Length: 354
Ligand SMILES: Cc1ncc(COP(=O)(O)O)c(C=O)c1O
Image (cartoon, rainbow, N blue to C red; front, side, top):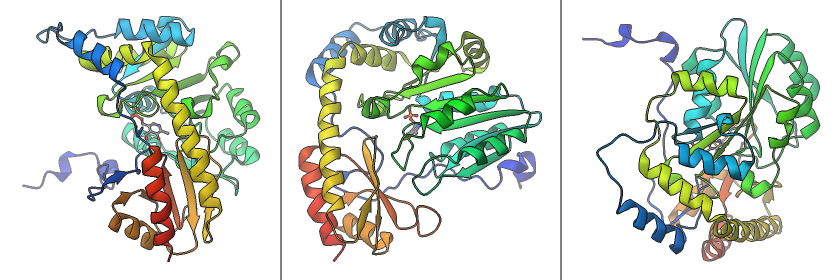
C-alpha cells in the first residue's frame, strides 16, 4: 500500500538531517567543544544523580535551571524558556508565527535548519544572499521585508558557517520594524562576546536563543534557551511538549552554569587555538581563511575542496565540506580543537594540498 497520499505534499522533497558517518580519529566537523566536562562538574553531577528519583516526570518548566539562568542573564524568569537543544525552540518560533501574508527570512549561506523549520511550519521562505564580506545588504533586506505583512527573521550571530558578526546597525534597523520578529541565534555567543541582550528595552520584537552545545561542551545532553518578552514565551509554552527537557539534562546544565569559571577557561583555550589556526591557515599557499568570531574557521581552497576533505579523512581528520557550487564553493569549515588536535590538523591540511 502506498502511504504517500496520506502525507503533506509540501514535505515531499525534504530529506532527513544527515550526519557524516565517516570513521575518524579527530572530529572537527560539528562545532562541538573539544573538551569534555571538567572533573569538578562531573563529580557534582554524579553526586546529584545518585540521589535522583527516576520514576517521576521532570519539572515541566525547568524552574531551577531557569532561575539560575535568569540570575546569570539578569532577566526575569518569565522571559525564559528552555528547550531540548536550541533547535527545538527555533522550530517553535516558526510554528507560533502568523501565516497570513508572512515569510521566514534568513541570509544565505547560514544554518540550514532555519529553512527546514519554516517549511515544516508551512511558511514561505526567502534566503537573501550575503555580500562578499558575508554581511547583510541593508537595502535588499528592507525592500524584501516591505513585501510581506509579517516577517520572521533568523540571524545566526555569529553566523554559521561563515563565522562573522553582521553589522549591528543593519540588524538594528530591521529590529525597528513593527512587522518583523527578529531572532538572534547566539549559539556561539561565548566565543564572540557580542550580544543583543541589552536591546530588549527598546525592542519587544527581539528573540535571543543560546545553547549549552558549544562553549559548555554539553552537546550530547540537548539543552538550549530562549529569551523573549513574556507574551512570546507564553505562545511557545502553549505548543511546547510537556516535559520537553529531561531531568538529567536540567541538572547537568544547572551545575555547568554554576561553574562558569571552568567553562571560561575552556573558551579561552579555544580562542587561543582559533587565533593560531586562522593565522597559520593564512600563511598556507592556496588557502584563504575568513575572519571568525566563533569556534570554527571557514576557509576556501584553490585545490578542489572535496579532494582536500577526502585527504584529511584519509589522515583521520573529519572537517565540514560544503559542496562544489554556490557561495561556499571550495569552502571547508574546521572546528577549533584541543592544542594537540590543532597541531595535527595543520600539517595534515598542508599535506592535503600537495
Ligand atoms: C547557528 C546555530 N544555531 C543553532 C544550533 C543548534 O544548537 P543546539 O545544539 O542547541 O540545537 C547550531 C548547531 O550547530 C548552530 O550552528
